[in-house]
Length: 556
Image (cartoon, rainbow, N blue to C red; front, side, top):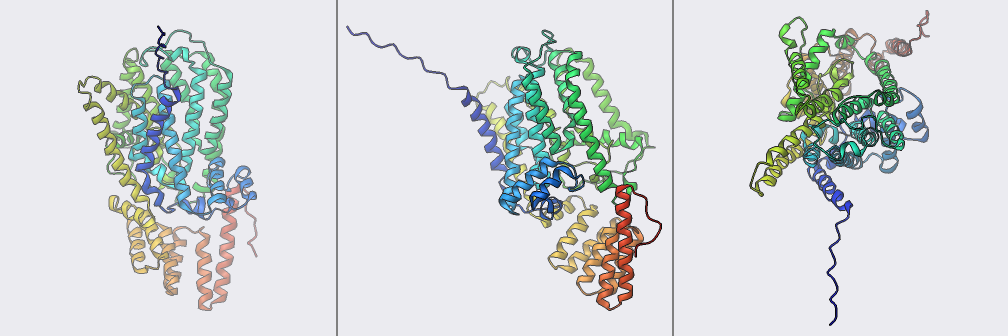
């Protein structure tokens, strides 16, 4: 009797399928709900970063990006190198720039899932999906200038992934609940190749955006969470990371002050007392957490808070943060440890944008959605873990995925709608003014856009509205003067340019424009005098930027 062949045991699906299908799902969600961004044009700041950036045009420009601080608005050479490559491949077609941002966001979402899964966090894929679809991320993805966010986040997480393999080898995290500190093998470390890989990727993150300098703190936070304590050797290995981060932070701050803050008018707007800075930090933390929980309304420019250090009640938000940390610290032996780790990550990554260091956007608002792009991962991971644990109690097998699907669908629709406001400048500024009527910079920029479209009467209304909101807005007077000059109202143009100089005597471009108008009127002596004043103002500005003493004699 012939022997029947034994039934072959079905082979387990290869591990890469387990990784690729959820990853493809995340990427597909990002692509679907960010489709409107592919039709968007360049918007605010994209002109400085891409459209008018001469450094993108040649190999010499690429050399300047890496070797000449001030050649770009910030020293983020890897970010601007990505723009350089885009320009060489696609020219000024916005579709390619937006598609790359979307791709970077999708890759970052996949990395979030892999890292959280590696750390045994409950609901790792849901956390990545929340990040992929949360509308607060739209500003970083749909705005070309925020390539620095999407690119730096990718390298930040790649570096963190390698760092986990070194500081937290699998023997420490492979088993057990993520909320329980690991006390065994506290001195064990992984292979050194992961250390050097993490360091190299960290440098790439810093070259993309210097706020990623917080990575050493994040590493120590994860070590404390998973190991149960910090050992001296763990801190020793972090020192090279800390040195690189401090150096890059110093370079960025120096360039920001020399070429942006010190060159701007009304520098007093950045002169805040330490009391005001602590108030801003407390309010900002709750603001960002609130937008994660209830993302409405989202604005491109939020109202700038009036901060009064003399009011005791203004310190309540910060006091609430301190109390919350104290309570979680008391619970660190049980459930409080992972919660404290998530909250501490949120605060740590937000730290550069909490008001302690002056940055140019604080001129308009102390908060912005793109400031919490990376920081949002902490609360979102915590929320996903909580939702997952709650859904375990739901007996209905159909209800559980339905709840998750409904949540992601709502976030996806909100993201789709929010992406739509980045279609072009007019849509962006009108949406901003609809939500924040006192956004003087939106009034001014919308007026400038309308002037370029030769819709002069509409433009003038917005310039005057900007001046009404902020009477010392010299830029609005300057733009109003340009509009009057284009329309042939030469006397009005001179009056507006002179008003600009009253508010900002060092604004050289006003002298230049007055000279042009005087030449059109035939007043050549006045035009020459204004050009001389322009030259003097320009030299003074350059001397201030380089901290070189001014010459005694006037320029000829």
